[in-house]
Amino acid sequence: MAPYMPILLITCTVNAAKKPSPTVANSPASVSSASEPSTTVTINGKTMVYPPLDTTPDPNDPVVQEYIKGLNLSSVPNLPRSNGGVPNHLQPTCNSSTQLDPDQGSWTCQKHTASDDIQECPTVGNWGVTYDDGPSESTPQLLDTLDECNLKATFFVVGSRAVSNPGILADAYKRGHNIAVHTWSHPALTSLSNEQVIAELYWTVKAIKDVCGVTPIYYRPPFGDTDNRVRAITRAMGLKTVLWIPTFDSNDWKLVATPPEKDDVVINTFNNWTQIFPTMSTGFIVLQHDLYPQTVAAAIKVLKLAVKVKGLNMTTVPQCVGDTKPYLEVGGSPGQY
Image (cartoon, rainbow, N blue to C red):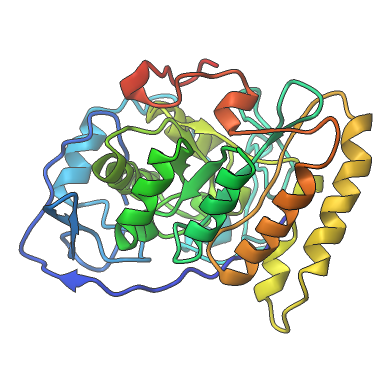
């Protein structure tokens, strides 16, 4: 599993006096020290107000509380939180601070996948192309390369980045890419309370809806960190969990580690995949990132190599599982694909 990909901190105008209205019918929420949303941005010509960037939004915000009232959370099990219940925005660990129930279903610590977790593509040779943590200022270069290769991908966007770079996100959607949820501030979700998990997801869904005009139904937990409690919450919110086969981690996080490695590590990893996928009984989903210039540059090199590999069919995640309706507005049905 890839360690934490640090999130860019981008400053927007602050205005704590205003609150957004609950316009997203099927969306989630989040936790901060502020009692009200306080990031003001202009999206599609309208002034919009969101929580502080890169901080778990306040679950006590009236907008979030109103949304929670409409959720059926009766199936959410009472399971321990990771990290001793202290909210964690770093790579989750499985040390003594993380208590595990036999029924925890932790992907991080027990390598458990639920029957409705999407971790692979059913068809051999199908590659679910994904990029996490953006959109960033480097994302347009990746979009241009995807166009050149006549490919579409799924972008799991961080809500704080979505409202920081709304024009780039809108462009990705207009080019036909699948836009999906990756939380507001990139926490380890299993370390959060139920309401904090909801708040993280609510504001990200709202941001995507505000920018792109559609409500996503696919989401990826940061670090892949989920368990049976978080799964039950996200099901109640109408979101499908997307993970990845651990072997198909691109290792691009090493490019921004200390000290950084050269992009040869990503190319070598890709070359290894080309030897593995023909022997598999399914297709696969890959973990890559579009947050940094280094990871985007590596992703572009991989794309230009991948289109030459016989037997590879690169698609969005919904396409790879046979779903032609990835948003509520086009008839998407959460939990069915």
